[in-house]
Amino acid sequence: MVSFTKLFTAGLVATSAIAAPVEVKRTSSSKRGAAYNDVSTVSTLSNSGVISWAYNWAGSLSGSMPSNVEFIPMLWGAKDFGGWITTVETILNQGSNYILGFNEPDMSSQANMSPSDAAGYYKQYITPFSGKAKLISPAVTSSTTDGLGLSWFESFIGDCSDCKISGLAVHWYGNTADEFKSFVTQAVDTASKYSLEEVWITEFALSADANGSSDLATTTAFLNEVIPWLDSQSGVTRYSYFMCAEKYLLTDSALNEAGTAYTS
Image 1: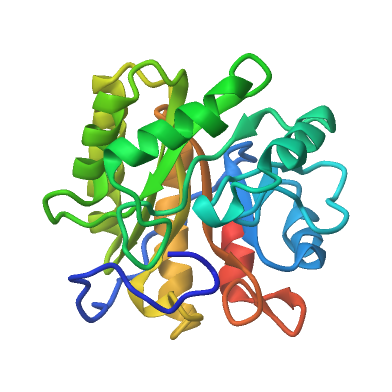
Image 2 (image 1 turned 180 degrees about the vertical axis):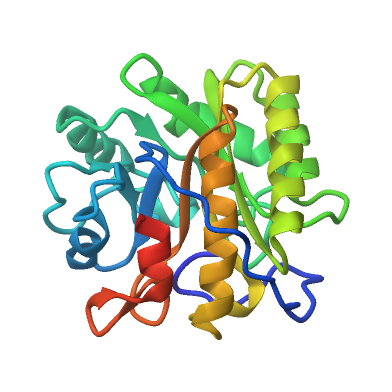
């Protein structure tokens, strides 16, 4: 799921209530990122000092990034193949150290690629930059349907064992913190199975919040539970909540309750 779609991962059910956990003191984390459409919003999150990276589902940042935040380019899908090489070379020369693979290629409404086609495109457009940047896999959904989600990824990596990928990217939309932790644990185990060093959670949110926070208190309770947990997981190297925008982590251009929880 990307910022400009309202499609949910198939099979999501109504959000259940999340009890507020005991407050846990957090430390700064270089894992935390900002998923954005409008680059001017990133500074609102990064002023906290805990946001180290950002991306916008594209190869260029479309504006000026705060100096303490690394922009990470993504090759969203086939629609962005034209001009990609020039664009990403420019971004890497400006100091970006990673490249993100295709956006939800397991979903027909998103990058929509078969594992074998995705492997071929990855080798053509992303693998040549190995050595200049660390390469992250296409970001798959949390769907448990056979042929989607991590199942799609395993088929892909079978065709892309020589793609020089160093990390697995995943997305999650669901109903509870426990569901989220279970999925992330499964993703880390899958990455380990293929000797991948990193897991990036480049989108995650409660399913009810996919089009904007439906209840800030519930969202805040969820974040207060999962952020310290993510920071404690050695297999998770980067994550970004969905998303750095009005009605999500911001209200009237300022951090709302959920945004404060995410950046604390």
